[in-house]
Length: 235
Image 1: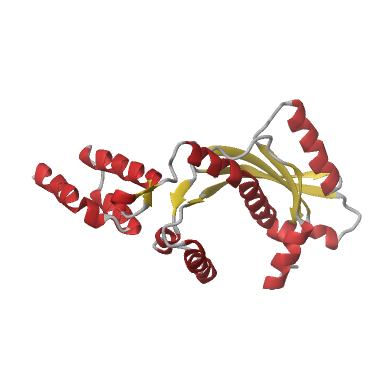
Image 2: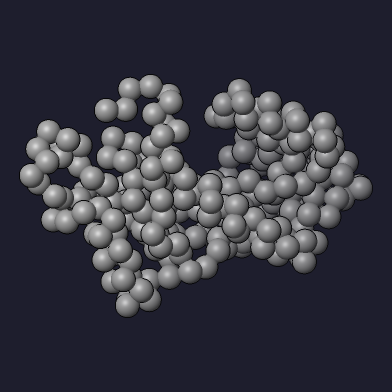
């Protein structure tokens, strides 16, 4: 049984990827990945006569990577204290407006099945089937039953790491990471995103999201007159 924080590390060490997706994360769109996590059921510890595997399936959706800076990231909510320490470190090393990219994932659990066989054999069988059907955006993993999603998190980390260089190159090639001096050095991608938000607000969207984004980038002063003019036009 997994009872303490140290077991999270052991679960990660015992989790491994049998089959990776055949392509990296998309830079300018959403990547929808099907996952299969195979584990040895916990009840086998009580009855070793049974040789079965648990298959958990679902989808992980990776949203279009967002361009951020350490200063921007410090204004996001929901991160751990250690993450904020990391953002502070990055700011001290590369500057508060040094652009980077942030990935956002959403896990949509599907179903759970129990089948005969050892976990590793089941995983390889699933992998072969996916290859035959050319399911390029599918991943197969072997994990620990009590913390099966540790395997999923491990995959997300490794998949992101393998994709980030290509994503950054794509963004650089389109000039989206270039600092805009007229806007305090914010990257071009941020300015484009703000322009899209202005259009959405003009079409009836909530202006609070625009104000929040301007504040995160420290750009409200650059857009203040234009922002206030939105309300004058509505009046």
